[in-house]
Image 1 (cartoon, helix red, strand yellow):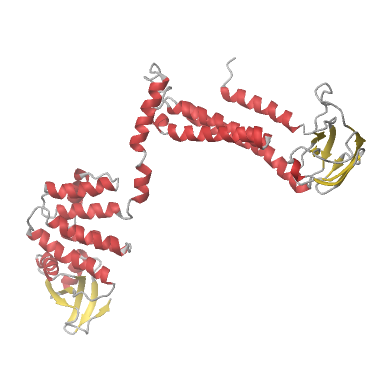
Image 2 (cartoon, one colour):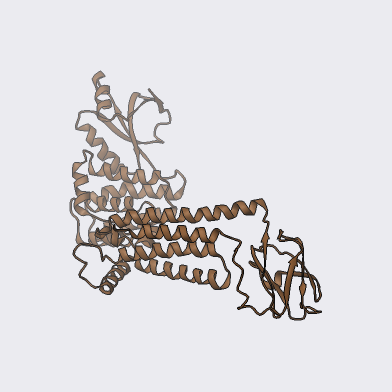
Length: 439
């Protein structure tokens, strides 16, 4: 029967954990190994808690402590507080952090004497939760690896793993395992970190692409080098995403519409837009954006102005709007000529942006109004402009189409409605102070 690596890992972890849970060893330490010049005969109590006073009885301890000291499991020798020391009796205070184990007298080596720490209930609960967390970690790693292992033959799965990151991760875990073994003995942390080393190793192996179909005959080291080269190319992707300005996609769309307002995309205009799209890591597709323009039923001028209006409605940073204003001006002059289409739209959107930058409604505005001449005109206006507002002026009932920043642009809007035989005029808001909105 074939046993999967994960099943082996689970069995080993269970055996390891059962062994580790036996906190009080029952097998005495071999007397052949330890030189028993001093001898501990008994303790005042074999079970105690932090802060208790412990009396150690025996013989040949030495009349004075000198450079002798007591060793308790789980704490440094310097943490132990000595109350008295004689040849047959030593009195100490049990420090915080002492673990179950054996007590020894060092320098003048004694026999080990078993003891047990009665930890507070809350510490016992935490110890239990830590042991449970080891199994939780094991289950988490298994489920994570199992998901990837099933798909290890796919190139996309292999390329989703960072070999450089995993190498750093594994080395860091190895350092912690060494620390938990030789410096700060912690069997639980050592075992938990070892699980993550196993996880990192499996992910590293998948990341090499060695399981991808068609690459199994390629040497492992060659695959590693290929993966690292690919990773170097993609290393700054996330950074670019982090530093990409907010509304960057909207800005590229606005610039493209502006460049195409005269139905001609000059190569110098294309170069400017492409430069910013590449800097912001945006997929700039001329064909895609042109298709959106052709599919739209709106006039190109109206569509571009609406894009700028929606952008301003999101309250972008003032610095960004100022840069966009300069960029629009640069784009219009990029091909060394300003077409009538560019002149018309720029006369509208540049004051629009300027008004936002000023934070004050000081820019002169133009109001487009349709005055119905026949009863059926009202229905026609509502059909053409569902968002129009019925208003009362000194001259009677009218419909407000919108407010604009350029007379030329407002007049262009008027001409759109005059084609439908609707009486449309342009006037400044200051010309008629008796305009009231109505239903």
